[in-house]
Amino acid sequence: STYNRTNVYTVLLSVLFIGAVVAQIGSTYSIYIHEVFPDMQSQGFSILFAINSFLVVILSAPIAGWLKAKDKMSMVGIGGLLIGSGMG
Image 1 (tube, rainbow, N blue to C red):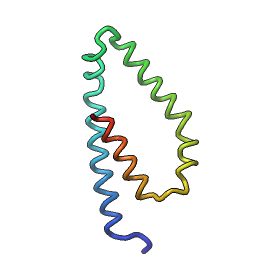
Image 2: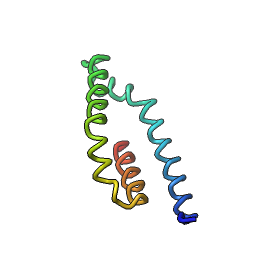
Image 3: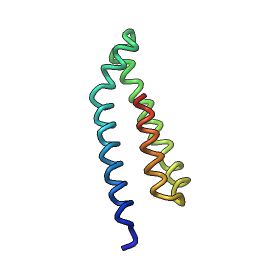
């Protein structure tokens, strides 16, 4: 096997923690937005999600192409770091 057992366990544990962060964001983000921007109400929340969707569609292919040749384990770590830093 070309995969080191330690690397596989590290990736699985990282995916577990990243999934927990994403679940937390999904369950409380709307409450946070409502408290921080009370004047925007649901229209502001909808605009934020539309901008997010637009950015994902536009940027995902160029970023994936740029990262294609990079070390996969490093990318998992950097992705986890970015998602985790978004919680702060």
